[in-house]
Image (cartoon, rainbow, N blue to C red; front, side, top):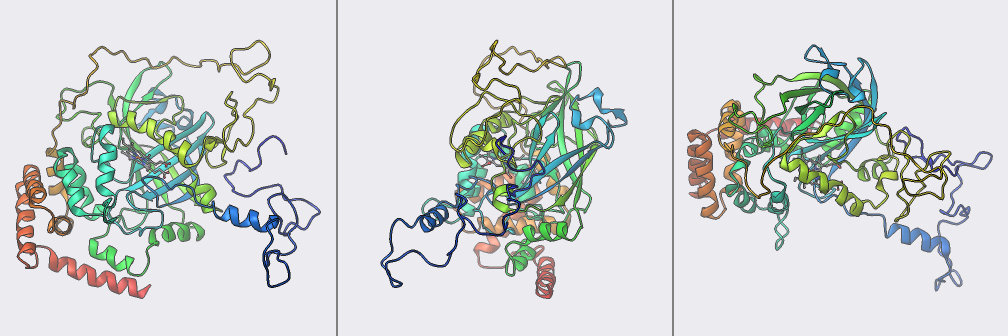
Amino acid sequence: DGTGTAVTGSGSSRDPRTAEGENAQTLTTRQGHPLTNNQNIRTLGNRGPATLENYAFIEKISHFDRERIPERVVHARGAGAHGVFEAYGTVGGEPIAKYTRAKLFQQKGKQTPVFVRFSTVGHGGHSPETLRDPRGFAVKFYTEDGNWDLVGNNLKVFFIRDAMKFPDLIHSQKPDPVTNRQSGERIFDFICNTPEAMHMVAFLFSPWGIPANYRQMQGSGVNTYKWVNAQGEAVLVKYHWEPLQGIKNLTAQEAEAIQAKNFNHATQDLFDNIKAGNFPEWELCVQIMSDDEHPELDFDPLDDTKIWPQDQFPFLPVGKMTLNRNPENYFAEVEQAAFGTGVLVDGLDFSDDKMLQGRTFSYSDTQRYRVGTNYLQLPINAPKKHVATNQRDGQMAYHVDSAPDQNLHINYEPSSLNGLKEAPRSAPDHMPQYTGRVMRQTIDRQNNFKQAGERYRLHEDWERNDLINNMVGALADADRRVSDKMVELCTNCDPDWGKRLADGLQAARSGKQSEGGNQQNEAKQEAAVAQAEAQ
Ligand code: HEM
């Protein structure tokens, strides 16, 4: 229709240019030519040779040759769904406006459309969904002020606290560059030299490292953000999604039993439940802290390897999300979706969390490469509101982001000739003040082992047994320099953890079966195999 709104704002991937009066089912080329023969290439005589001016065939095959884009460098395997977020309007019994002016949260019952993509992290686009890995939980809110992306994981902490380390972390978890196989030795070689990762290890190698599906897992923003109110005052916040379906995790044996029958089980579970009208729901909770260094705490509030203890910083519900619509096309909606931590709306802000700062560059950088310069014009990524920019051109420019009365000759600002104008400021900016020296240093309050040890003790017996067995499995064949150091780090967290790992490794190396928990887990495995067979 010339305005560039070729696809509706509902997030549908259908092209609405279906001609009325024509037979809408008629197969055409992308040039609109009706295709009368889709079975045969054009040849000289019916046994060939083929001719080259065979436009319909060349178009078809050369499009096919380009049907893949680079997959995400991390989080390549995913599943997505559309839904709605409904605000409660309050936080901890107070009007939410006290803390944030973000419009989507203000009125009780206010609805904002969302798109969510869940994912695994380390392996490729069609890898099994039963693998031990954090799970991605990325939410795009299409708000009236433009998009807000909350790009989180299921676990509440991360391996590292500085963005400089991210490529090394990921290299250690990706397949070996020589053998193309993932290796426990390489994973733990990085971890044993990165003690801040121990809290994550306590989760990831326990059943929390294999959520049973995407519906029954939590989500967390992990990094620390800020909320800003109408006076420009800020507080620190952490975001948490709590599943109303409950939480369910798998032991390694249970996961193996599922994987033997189905390596798409989480995608299937999400799609089938939504299709059946069994819509999954999550409550969004926040933890709030005043915006300062908090010297009274034994951890730094900007350290994403730490949780904020709930007894001091309770979870305060602010709204509920319901996923109620499956994508119509996986590629257009899920594969091309692009989330980023820089995508915030007025009333939400960054903290100085060093990971968050690094992430914020990385997402849009990779998306300009992975999807293309104009990725924000794609229906799944475009906001569902007016967009007017002076950005022009680039590969696959789909339309001009212009205002209806704008002078289209004017693609710059400022101008006196009816160009775009800056938006009026509605509330004061949050303007934190800084003094300090520029440096490269680790934060002072590292406290790498305390919360990891607490997590070890908080696990139920079957979770602790699974943690030990999984670590023994990953480390039994590793170089002693790596496994000895891991025993040392586990001992620092909790002496029992270190001892059980050392004993397990010794037993595995001497060919004996590791004691402690195997019997319980064997019983669980048998039950899981029986369940998988019954499906
Ligand atoms: C995806 C970078 C840490 C959650 C990605 C992608 C990159 C990236 C390049 C691929 C994006 C795309 O192709 O669209 C980084 C860097 C990090 C970091 C540099 C640290 C400095 C984290 C953390 C979390 C996280 C701590 C969890 C809170 C995700 C999720 C996705 C993702 C959920 C998938 C988004 C989707 O479904 O499209 N990350 N990441 N990342 N990351 Fe991170």
